[in-house]
Length: 82
Image (tube, rainbow, N blue to C red):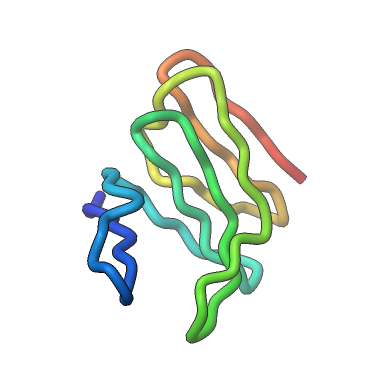
């Protein structure tokens, strides 16, 4: 778990301040928040969000990638995405 913060390089204003749990697999970075959002990021010098989903409950565990399936555990469910 780590703290994630998005800060504007022009104004210095904070647009995102969250606790995040990153995972990695299949040439992608998976970021889950305690608020229940999971995002798929493309690795690289610039931030590129490939997908974003809001789940029904807070996410308390790091996303796991096994055999091409992304597993995400929330406070109430276990999701498997292919």
